[in-house]
Structure formats: structure tokens, C-alpha cells
Picture 1 (tube, helix red, strand yellow):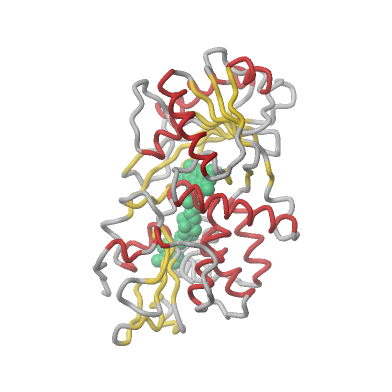
Picture 2 (cartoon, helix red, strand yellow):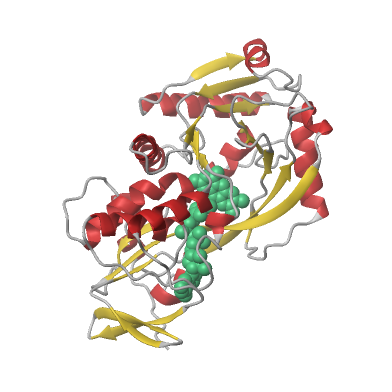
Length: 376
Ligand SMILES: Cc1cc2nc3c(=O)[nH]c(=O)nc-3n(C[C@H](O)[C@H](O)[C@H](O)COP(=O)(O)OP(=O)(O)OC[C@H]3O[C@@H](n4cnc5c(N)ncnc54)[C@H](O)[C@@H]3O)c2cc1C
């Protein structure tokens, strides 16, 4: 396994559950990539219709089961998502999203302005309408990584970047690290952007920076949300639609600690982890307009994480198109926390040649054609 983010940890967990022996190599430390610098929406409300919405529903159900089984108890928290709209165009967009969720048998509740104000006291008056998605949830990525690796009894080899794959004919038989070659029956690359040079995805992966703001606890302020407020602008960004009114893809997320996470920007092509005054102030201005009670809170931290997207907007998960013994799982963009249990289980099945339980055909790397490999 290459990469100890949430995807690598989930695959390692399901592989060990099935009896496989796993070595996990990590360039830095576990969850030091996107999995440790993100929000944790386990959300169907935010997904593009089609395979992503279907897979998110299946993965969210797995979160519920893993929490009930004790593995993710205290880490996965069910809670509703509230989509909201501020213009007629946004009302139409969330209505479309609602119809598509209904098509997938998702429970939703459409809310008028008055109904929304009643359910979410303190909401800004210019919010026109909303949709409640009752069955969503939340899990912080770094906590999931920690729990999965402990349960798998896998100790990642930290500060061990994989430099290249080792091949024998057209089969991958190991990896090269600074300490030498490590051989393996097969190699799974779940290294986010680090997968690009290793498996030939340089032309297909796109970094997209997201800046986030953390407030202090809301105890005295009266601010309390029953679930995250997710803007129609967020849906538009996922669907690659440009809305008439300029809008950040705002989400105001109440954490179980009583703090709020306010995010996030989507800065395509940026892979630095700096935050800047312009973006943070835009996010805060938009957040205050939607939920004015935030004004009483202190900002205690800002941070940025890097989502890794793909050219066609779908994750890249499955066997390498031409090299045997090599599997990849990357390009999760803003959905990797949500999809981790399903992808972990599905990739473990592929590696072990077990019958497939999920339809991942839309994510198959074969859709990308021949991948150039740079083998050093
Ligand atoms: C601001 C922001 C908000 C987000 N919000 C959500 C959300 O609400 N819900 C959701 O579902 N998702 C969300 N995401 C997306 C989610 O965080 C990612 O999709 C997910 O963390 C990707 O996990 P990963 O394991 O693929 O990658 P990563 O967590 O980046 O892990 C990859 C690991 O591979 C290691 N690595 C890289 N190269 C090598 C190498 N050569 N050798 C060894 N190791 C290597 C890295 O050091 C890293 O630890 C958000 C992301 C951001 C940035």
C-alpha cells in the first residue's frame, strides 16, 4: 500500500480483515494529506447525480454499520444536511438536486423560507428555500484513519516515499524507496497527487485548494445548527455550473465540539497550503450573511487542504489498464471521506479476486486509455 490517507487506511483495513498481510508506506505521516485537512461530510446531499450519488449512499450506509459495530463508534455521527438557495436560479438548482435524490430513493424534505427559518433559527432572512436531507452524517478524516489503522494492526512506515514501481515484464513486483526495494504480490497506490508520477496520471489529476476557517466553541453566542448549511453554490461547483450570482461554495458545518467549520474555496490548480485574507474574508462575509449569529464567535484558526480531482470529475479506482499487480485509488476530489469505506472494501475485493459487491465500472482507470509510465 502506498499512502496512509483515508483511502489507503480503508483499503489496508479491509485487506487485513480478509487475512492479507499489508505493508503501508507513507511519504510523511498518516493523514498528513487531504484526509487531515478537510471537512468530513458523509453526504449524499452534495453528490453529483449518477454513480457518485449512488456510491455515496452505499458508503454512507457502511459508515452507519461500522459505527453500529463499534469500529467507528464516536467517530461517525449521523446528522441532516440543509441545502439552501438565495436566488431563483439557486432554488431551481436545489430543486433539481432534490428530484435526483428522490430518484435514488433518498429521503428529502423540501422547505419553504418560513419552514427553514423555523427549523434553523437565526438564519439570514434572504435565504429563499431549502432542502433537508435527514440521513447524512459526518466523520473527521484523521480520526477515521487512526481508528482503521489501529483496528487493522498496520503500522505505517512513515517518511518513506515510494520513488517508483519495480517491474518484471509487465507485472509490478514491488516498489523502490530510499531504503531499497520492497517486494510485494501486488501494489496499491492510494497516494492522492503522489499517484501522478507513480502510475502515469500526470495529465489526469488536478489539485484544487480549499481554505477553511475554524471558530471557537459557540456556548455563549446562541449559534447552534442542527446540521451543516450547504449552499447551492457548492452544488454548482460540483456540477461545474457557473451561477449568475458570484458565490463561493459555502458550507457552515457545526462540529460535535460546538465549534464551526466554515469553508471552503475551490482554487483549481493550486497545491500550496497557504490561506489568504481575500479568500478567508469572502468566506466569512458570505457565512455571516447566511448565519448572522456567527458574528459573535472568535476565529481561532484557518487552514487549507488540497483536493485531488480528475479531468472527468470521477475518482480513478481499479486495476492499472496495462500492468498487472497494480491497483490505484485516487482523484476523490471533495468526496474521499464519504467514499472511503466503500472504496476500501471494493479495492480489497479486487486485490483478493473476491466477487465484486459494488459497481465501480464508472471509476475504472481503463476509461483513461494508455497511461504513460515514468519508471526512472
Ligand atoms: C478543504 C477540503 C474539504 C473537504 N471536505 C470533504 C468532505 O466534507 N467530505 C468528503 O467526503 N471529502 C472531503 N474532502 C476530500 C477528502 O479530504 C479527500 O478526498 C480524501 O481525504 C482523499 O484521501 P486520500 O487517501 O485519497 O488522499 P490523502 O489524504 O491526500 O492521502 C494520500 C497520502 O499519500 C501520501 N503519499 C503521496 N505520495 C506518496 C509516495 N510517493 N509514497 C508514499 N506516500 C505518498 C501522502 O503523504 C498522503 O498521506 C475535502 C478536502 C478538502 C481539501
